[in-house]
Length: 311
Image (tube, rainbow, N blue to C red):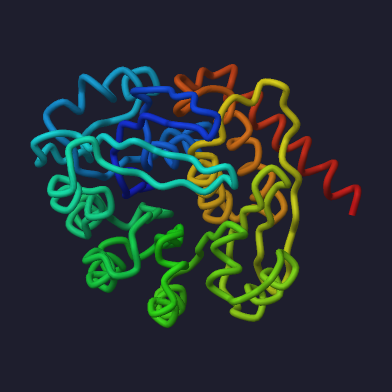
C-alpha cells in the first residue's frame, strides 16, 4: 500500500508555442504531479484510466523510476492525446487529436475515480492528490474515500476552467471547506477571490483559513498555513527549457511536504526545487537517479536555510 496516491489524467501532449514552434509526443497530465513527489519518496501510486497503448507510451518512464502500473485502469480504447496551445500571455488550452466525442467520453477530467482511491486506499495512506473539476463525480464519494483512507490529507489542485466560471464559485469554496489543503496559481486566485494582485489574493487565502500552496510562476511560491504566508523564491537555472507541468509538479511536492509535517517555508522550497528540475526539458524529468534525488534534497534544504535566514 502506497503512502501517497496521485489521481488524475494520463495524457500525451503536442505543445504549440506563440512563436509557431512545436514539440510532439511528450508525456503529460498528472504524471507531472508524480514527478513532484517522486524525487522525495518512491512510496506512491498513480491512479488513472488509459488505453491498451499505455505501456508503449508510459512504460519506460514507469520502469526507469521504479513505479508500479497497478493503479492504471486500461479501460479506454486509447490513451488520451491532446494538442496544448499556448498564448503569448502564458495561458493555454488543449484539444484532443481524437475529436470532441472522444474527449467528451474519455477525458481528461473523468479519469480520476473514487473507486480507484477506495480500492488502493488504507490506513497507511498519508496524502492524496486530485486534479478534478469541482463538479466531477469523484467528489460525490468524498466521505467513502475518507473512510477508506482515514489518515490521509486530501488535496485539490483547483482548475483554471473552474475559477473562470463565476457560477462555480460557491461550489469551489464548499469543496475547499471539505478537504485539507488546496492549490491555486495567481491567475486562478484572482479569478476566484475577485482580487487584483498577489498580495490581495494572499490576504483572501489567509482569511479563508485553509492551507493553500500558492503558485506565482517564475517568482516562486508561498505555502499559506496557520494564518501566515511563507514565500520561497524559484531556483535559478540556466537550463530551463519548458514550464509545462511545473504547477502540477510543485503542487505534488507541496502535498508531500505538508503531509510530512515540514515547516511551511520548507514545503515551498521543496516544491520550487521540484518545479525547477521539471523545467529542464520538454515533458517530465525522465529518470530520478539516487544522485539526482540527493542533489534535489540538498538544494531544497539549502534554499530553506537561506530563505529563513534572510527573513
